[in-house]
Length: 112
Image (tube, rainbow, N blue to C red):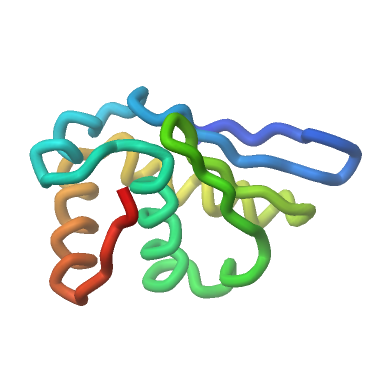
């Protein structure tokens, strides 16, 4: 799940976190015209849920900031699955290029 991490914030409450600006693909994201901030990564998460993991829809909430992506909720398994799917993008330059191009071709806008 690297570079994301899952923490238990309170008993039965979890947060999936990614410190923006710390991924292997930050330079590629910038080259694609985006800022690799928390809002960009929320867009990545939403696109992945919509296209690759629709079973995760509605099972957690998002709360990004400029310096951090955060998804949170009580469904640890859903957050773990999201972390695994997102890690595949955050560590693979070709994958992030493909995702951004696919999203933009559909008219999806990253809020970065």
